[in-house]
Length: 78
Image 1: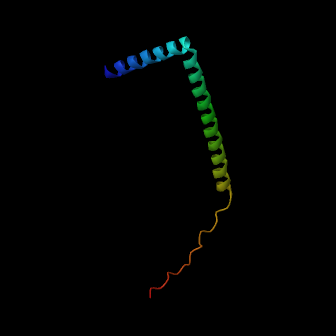
Image 2: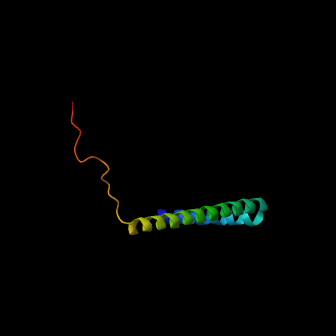
Image 3: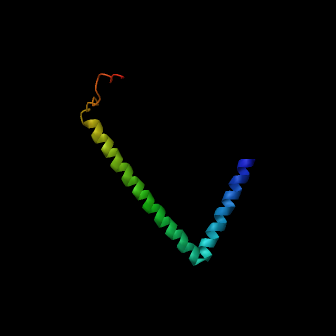
């Protein structure tokens, strides 16, 4: 019952927002601006994901480097 209530509240809020967008050109402009920014953000995220995926794929294909930069023996305490 609680889920049905919140579903109805969400639907009513969506209808109220849609009505405001249709009736008020300023609201429509703001919504369009946010939609444009959201698309730009999504494109940037997608580009970054693709770039990082290709970097990881290149690292997997490259031979493993030796990580033995440290000395094998421990320093002696004085």
